[in-house]
Amino acid sequence: MNAEQRADPYAVLEEFCEEDFLYSYRMDLIALLEAAMCSEQMEAYTAKQCSDLIFTCNNMQKMMEAVYVFQRLVYLKKITISYNE
Image (cartoon, rainbow, N blue to C red; front, top):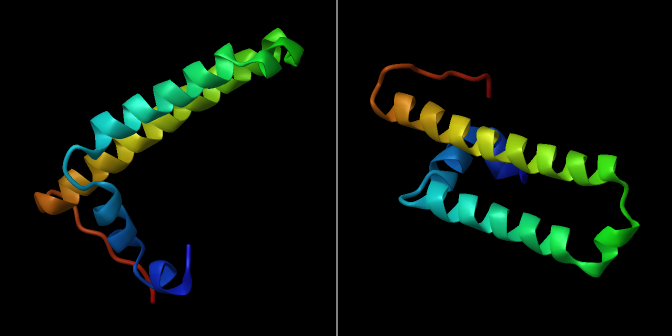
């Protein structure tokens, strides 16, 4: 993140959570995983490396969903955030 984004990290979350982001990001992540798993280079990867890639993509998907839920809770004023400037 740049200095402006570090000064207001919530603005980054708001931008990230714009309408329909979750569905499109999920589809992009799945497409990237499929492309990686089907590439010729994957033949050189071990089963563990392939499993790790799937695990990482799964965790990234969970993180995106958690960010979205967090942002919605802030938007609905169910939680508040504060940070030191």
